[in-house]
Length: 475
Image 1 (cartoon, rainbow, N blue to C red):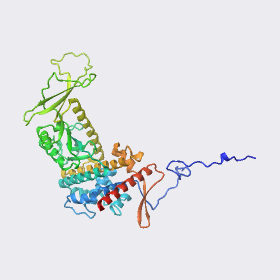
Image 2 (image 1 turned 30 degrees about the vertical axis):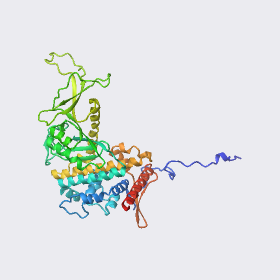
Image 3 (image 1 turned 135 degrees about the vertical axis):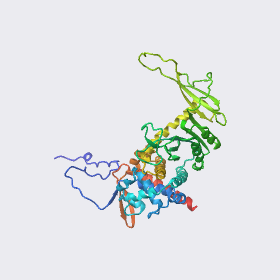
Image 4 (image 1 turned 180 degrees about the horizontal axis):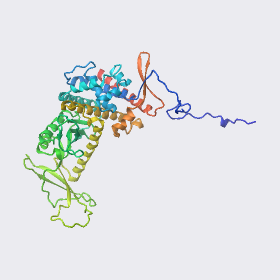
């Protein structure tokens, strides 16, 4: 007779994994049965977190106070129409006709309190009624949103850097404002040339506008610089402007000096006379040399400081030439900048080089819908431009709040540095089931999804901030 020892009858320990009720392994093959169910299921469960964030920032209140309504009246209202397009961009679609895929999306229908969303043509007609006035009012809404976001995220930057740059949006039809200009990837084709300004510390969009496809003039850049003061948070005391040579002019320098901003502008127009005896190297192993001087270009109102960096050219590995060149070229490559900052030249140029991240931000914004040009009318495209960047800023604040919660939840610790397309998989594309319990609607998430515990802790964090905000309002 075989005896069963006590050591063989011990209960197996429960797995620490989130999947406690896994049961037996499922077998899915070609003969697996299929059918339908009456429950509403959404792949966009993270939209519940967005509604909490919008409530935390009092977004609807600021929208109604600052938005300049167009002449077209809508049944759902201006807020629902604009936020519908913003939600479309937030989810990852960048064409108005993509609403055909979301008309019956239960999360979106629940947010807007409708059985189904309006047809895509309704949103298109509303977009067709928007003008430059609506685009400007959206900038005011974003400045209010920024103030609230910095407050709720605990951001108190007194010194910030603003990176200014332009990009090219190639157009392939007969859109108004299209011009043949600098377009390195599609030479000879028409395009727009918008200006975008980003804050380095938070990587959010501060100010910008859609422009015709022409080179930016000095007067226009000066107007952009003078507009920053209306969009900066109250805690900011000092601003550093960084821009490439396209923004280099006396108008830009004068505007920065008048507004008491620090600036570093790249230079390709002036040729300052540097003393050949004052070139230096910060480290003897480095090949690059640095210098500075005071110089007043023709037509400028005052002399400014110019800093320079020169790098020896590498000898070209070429075959024997039949004829030698008549004149010897300068053996150095130069980088020259105009600035009003003090300090050593190599330190200032190092600060300017951090501006390179603006190219990554512009590329990300283009992926999120900036490259989509929905209309042939310039005024409609101008308003759509600001709507896309409003959705981009909402993602920035959504990730910043998740990063604040990431101090307790390791899963969300690095989401701030992720691109939006990656953060969308972590915070938005989560399956959810909408059910009714009594007289309330509930959103339930699967315990089999490894993202669920972090998401629920994030929601608890947002609920705590909402409770704290309500207490402040009562006080």
